[in-house]
Image (cartoon, rainbow, N blue to C red; front, side, top):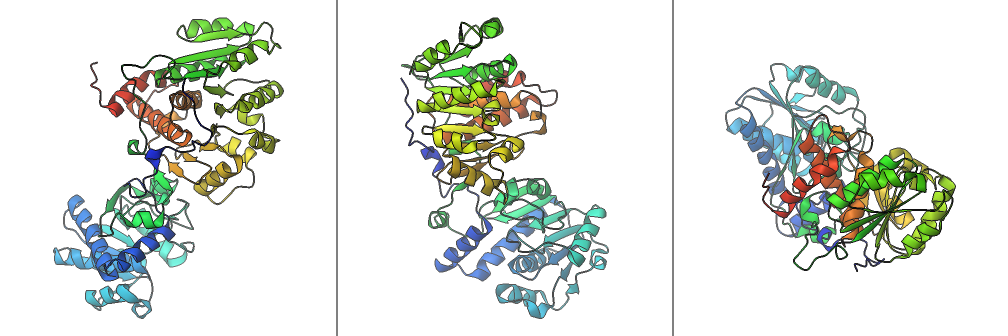
Length: 508
């Protein structure tokens, strides 16, 4: 029998400080620069490498044409001057416009401005005259104020003229820590950032404003990430490992999910199919007598147990008492919130793995502390934005921060669903997902996700890894299906996703 320790709060595969999937906050990126300088790489070399990397990416994508480089007062502006120098050396006609007096520049930015020469225009809409490409090097990820006034006017004029825009680090106006727009931000066709991505590159609306994102190597050693002790990743298969059965596997070694069926049978049926498709060895359903036929006919490979009457709890408790059922999924389509609350408390008292979805979250909207105090085993909460705000009404400051605080407060892994799903564990580790297509905005897709999480958790994955893997598989399945997707399609696409992840040949 698979047992999951209550202490298992994250997958060892996720503890990868130097992974390319690491997301660095603007403050952590500043530390990375400092550590690199302390290791003997000069600030001037870092800036030169950054600017020339942007120029190379431009040359890969566009033919020679007039370009205007918009520079700001800090290091991002310094990068812009290097871009301008490199493009001029390559024969491009370049105009540089600066948002502040040149005398206000400091350090490496001032040195590269001097290398460019005196031909610097003041930032204004006129600097765009004749331009066929614009480089936005005004503000980087560490934005400390709203973008408004003349800067917003010039960026807006470039956008209105449909000029392709290349953002240095991140589009000006996008907060690198949260992805929020501060004031105004123009959409980029290409964003070139450095060393590692920032949360603002993958959190909405920042992700949609970045266009194609390229991360350039500017000479910062990967080992710097160990000094920073990063705890945030963009969701990638390199962070976790899908369980693969071996020659000695049998249905009990692959985990046994108990789905608590409710009055709306479709939700639990979708979750059941997803849990089975993702590899759970067994799935049991416990339901009321009038729902037995719907579950039994729909899922002949599942074990279905019906209570003797609509109010009888003896069968539920008998089924729950079997410790081979190592993960419980409760909430989808359940209804009857008072009864559901009591069932959840009984499930949590077992200390077994548990996925609380949909009605299970609504059941404690008025008394979240009762739920949090009952959590003692590996629990995963899967709220959408509305459910999250009811459980955690006081948590603000961006999705990433809010979900981290929610996980810490609740003692559970929290999956805040959306186009930029954020998954966080109580120890502070967090994953941001960016592969979910808009076609997932259809009824029942959340029930499928809950089943995928439960199925992976039952197979021995730790909660943060199980949740991250399930969210990625869910998104990849939807991308493969394309337009016309309905929730019923998703479980049937999971085997193709698993074949790709495990390296097994697709024989279809």
